[in-house]
Image (cartoon, rainbow, N blue to C red; front, side, top):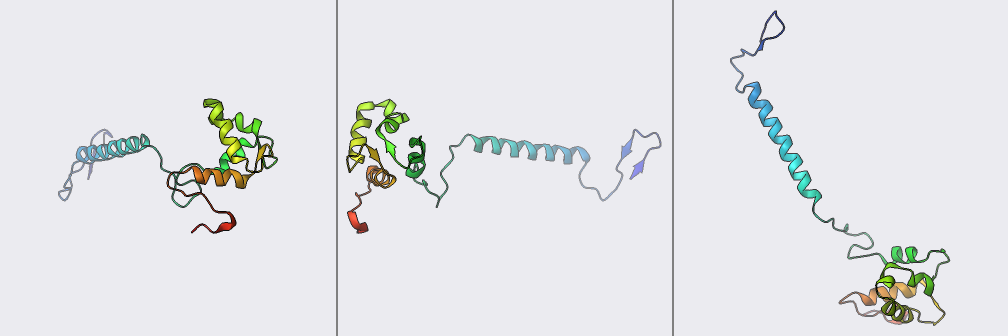
Length: 135
């Protein structure tokens, strides 16, 4: 390398140097732009649920139940159910669904009742049989 005494001119006069500094900087800039472009394109894709986690095929019934159970008593009352976002969309359908989920007719849904109704609602899922024999 030849360093000028003036401090302004720096030249690489190495005969073994294959690429100029401009070429290297240009390639680095292109690589960085390409990485940003790929990252931006991935950011627009909808995120998939992670495999093996609860709710991988949709919403987790336990999480929905916890959100509906606003007073945290372990039950979802009819008032809590009707205050949910789906019930606000179609109150008549929600009231019918609550009645179907409330197997004991107590005016409240247990987590087990909610999960059984949620599993039954999924397409292609047969209703669960009592006693755990679901063959």
